[in-house]
Amino acid sequence: MPLLSELPIVSTIYSPVRKLMETMTSPDSGGFKQVVLFEYPRKGLWTLGFLAGDVPFEDSRPPAHSIFVPTAPNPTTGFMLIVPREEIRPTTLTIEAAFQMIVSAGVAVPLTLRLPTDIDAGSNEDTPPAG
Image (cartoon, rainbow, N blue to C red; front, side, top):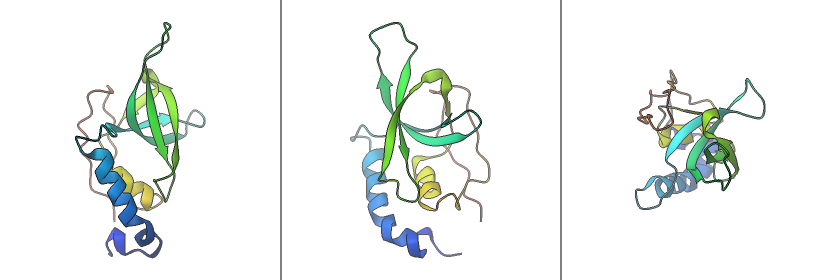
């Protein structure tokens, strides 16, 4: 099986995405903290996103987080959503594994996907991609 970077479409965006991923995951960047899932755009459809930070509200609203939702197959584009904490499900995917999943347009998916029960409990370990 060819390396992800050798696939025709993927190879044109792999290098810039790799650099973005390295920047966003370095300890000094203050980048993405964790890979998460949440139901969007409707209940029953799960969206993969990157936990970017906390969103403090002035009023008594429940805690929320800013989530960056990348677009496939080019995760350098996407959008940011503010999602209530109770609607976010952390995953055990590493940020690198999530980027591979996105760049491959879902072809390189993990064999299994575990969901810890708490947003702060994720270990960010992943199961190697299938295939």
